[in-house]
Image (cartoon, rainbow, N blue to C red; front, side, top):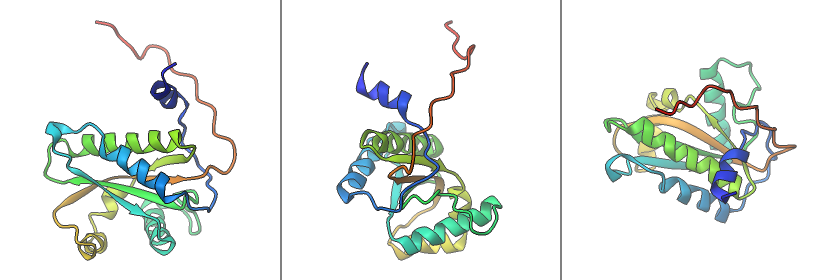
Length: 174
């Protein structure tokens, strides 16, 4: 079987990570794969924020927890030490689609390097706040951005879940 198709079939969301930070070269490779995602009109209208600083990662996790309504102490990133946040140009008509393709590439690349990943939502809500818009400005990121998602990345702590059976009746040849 083709290795890309195998990765697509084998990749699973990981919900428990070891605290060890992956090698920077691996993180860079994952990011590079995200930057090569298909995108509308070749605009490349999505960006990636690579969060490896534990204090910032924990702050984002706490804000994400509050938005999600979970109890204090819950980590919506499941302990992953790296959070790759995908944003897209708010005014671009294919922003959500383009950013979603970036997220898919990030997760497949992580899997191909032996790392676990999971897509976590609520980036949209975070980056609608003044605090997160200021975070962008503090890092020299200008413009209006919509949050697409957080790709939590790290070493899986435990077994990778088995795939759920695929549902029948989802393909129609016309």
